[in-house]
Length: 525
Image (cartoon, rainbow, N blue to C red; front, side):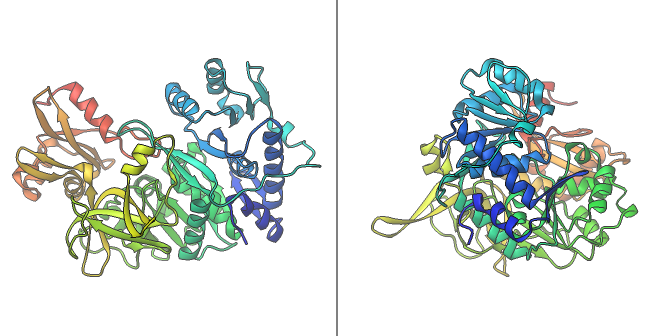
C-alpha cells in the first residue's frame, strides 16, 4: 500500500525494476536507477542538515534530473518548491526568502543564474548540481551518485505532511504559495490513474514545466502504475514541427497540456506528416480550447479520447468532460462533472446555493485540495467556504472564483472568472464570453479582452488579437464581425493585431501585461 508520494518510486522499482521510468531525448532512467539515485540525493540532503518538513528549491530546465530532485526531496522528508528558471532574479529571490530556502537543486545549464543567486542569498547552505566555487557549498551530481547508502535511514513521513508548494505566476497580483500535502498529491495520482486507466504500457508526455501543476501527472500518476514519463525539452515546445516529430517518435500514449500547445501543433506542426496512432488520451486543462481548433484536431486524431479537465492549482484538477465526438456547434463544451472523492456547490453572492440552472460561483470539496497558502492564513480562510456539519466539524470547500451553471445533463458549464465579470458603463460584461465570440472568426487564433486605463477617469474596452498564420486580418473586418455577433455595448472600442502575446510561466496569455502594454501606447486611432 502506498501512503505517501515518497513511497511511489520504491514500490514501483520492486515491481518494474528495468522499466523506463523517465526519459528525455536520448537519456533514460529505469525505476531501479531512479530509486537508487533518489535515495542518494535524500541521503546527502539529510547529511547536509535538511530537517523534515523544510523547503528545498528546484531551479532546473526540463531534464531527466528533475525526477531525481522531486523524489529525492520526498524521500528526505523535504518539501519541494519548483522555481521557474526563466523568472526575473528578483522574483526568484522573493520565493527563496518567502520559503526560507537553504538548499537548491539545479543543473549546470543554470550556472549563470545560480551564481547570481548565490551572491545575494547568504542564507543558502548547499547547492546540488553544479561544481563551481561559490560562497555556498556546491556538490556535483556525479558526487551525489557515488554516495554509499550504507547506514542510510529515511525519515518517517505521514500523508498529512507537506510535499510541495506551487507558486502562482503573480500576473494577477503577488505570487501565492499553494501548499499540497502527500495526501492531496497521492489522491491526485490515484484519481488520474483510475479515470484514465493508466497502465505500465503507457508513455505519458510531460509537456508542462515542473512549476506548473499539470506536471504532477507525469511525476506522480505515471510512476504509480509503472508507466514511462517522457519529459519534453523546452526547445521542442517552442518549435511545433519539432514537437510533433518527437511525440510521434516517442509513441506517446497520453498527451496532457494546455490547449495552446495543441493548437500550435495543429496549425504549425506539419501534423499530417506523422503517425499518432499510439495516442489514446488527449487531455487538456488551463484555458478554454477554441472549438474550431478542437474540432479540427479531433477529426485528425479520431482514435484518441479527448478529455477537458478543469481545476485551479489549489485542487490541481477536480472536474472532467470526455468528448466522444467532435463538437458540432460553436456552443462551449462543459467542464463536466467532478471526478472521484469530490463534491461541489454553486453559490450566489450571499453564499446561498442557487436554484438548478442558475449561475453562481463554483466551490469544491475534494481529496486533492491544498492545505492552504504558504504564510498567509488570512488569504487561506478567505478562499474557503465552510459548512458546519456538527459542532466542531466543518466540510471545507475551496472558492474557485469561477462562475458556472448546470446544464440539462447536470454538467457544469464554465461561464468565466468572477473577476472577469465587470460592470462597464451601466452594463454587466463577461470578458471571457466576448473572447469566445471573437474566436469564432476563422482567421483568429487567439484573443484577449480587457479594460484599458487611458487616464485616471477614462477606461475603454480593448481587444488584442493574434491572427492565424498566413491570414490577413484587418481591424475593420474584425470590427464588422464584432458588430454582427456582439451587442453594441460589448464591442471592443480598440482592436490591436499582435504577432504573439506575452505569456505567464505556465504558457497562459498574460492579459494584465497586454492591457498595460496597450494602455501605455495610448488609444489607437
